[in-house]
Image 1 (cartoon, rainbow, N blue to C red):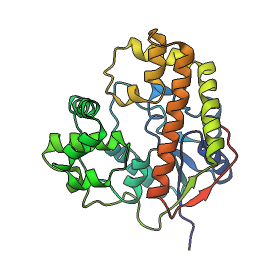
Image 2: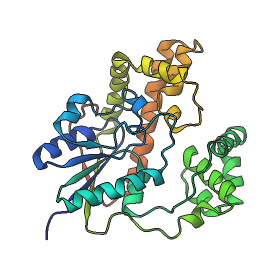
Image 3: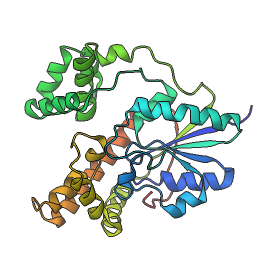
Length: 296
C-alpha cells in the first residue's frame, strides 16, 4: 500500500511542530500548509510566530499571512480554501504537510464540519458580553435551554466554544449540535496520517515564556501598535490573538509594559494548555512525537 500523501501535524503553540514540518519537507519535497488560525493574518507575523522569510524559502508554504486583520476567517472559510489546494497537490503527486494548532481545522479535515452560516460579529460580541455578565455556570445553564448537547459536551473553561454555540443558535434559530450532527470529512479515510507534537509540559511552558521574550525583541509592540491604530473591531479574530489585548493595555498605559509581558506569558501558557488538552481528547489515536523544543 502506498504511503498517504497528506500528513497532519498538530500540537500546541511553541511545541516545535513548524521545525518538524520544515525537516520533513526538506526530506520529501512536501508543501507546508497552514492550519493555525492566527498565522493566517498578515498583521500577526510576530505575535503568531509565523515562519520567517528564511524558513519559508526552505520549503513552499501556503495559507500563511493571506488575510488582513479586518477579515474574518472561520473554519468554514479555511476549509473552502484548503480543499481545492489539497486536490491540486494530490493531482500533481505532491505530498502535503498540514501544520498548526487550531483543532477545529483538523476536525474539518478528518471528521467534517457542518456548513454553518457565518455569524455576524455583533452577534458573537453579544454572546461574549453575556458570558462575561453571567459567568460560566449561569451561561452554560442558559445555553442548555437552546442546545443541551453542546452545554453538556463542551469542556469547563472553554469560553470560545460555549459562546459560539450560543451565537449560532441565536443567529440561525437552530442548535449548533443539530448543524453538526451530519458531516462529511474533507479527507477520505486512508488518505492521511496524523501526528501530534506533544513535548514535556514543563519544557513547553518554559519555551512559551522564552518565545514571548523573542517576540518583544522582534517587534511585537510595534505590531500591536499598528493594529490598535487601525481602530478595528475588538471582536475580530485577529484582535483576539494571544498578546494583542495584553500588549495593547501596556501601550495604553493601563498596565506597565513589564506587566503586559508577564500577562502575555501567562496567556500563552494557558493557550498551550488548552491545546494540549484538546488534542489529547480529540486525537487519541494519532501518533505522538516529542522533538527538541525550539520555539516554533
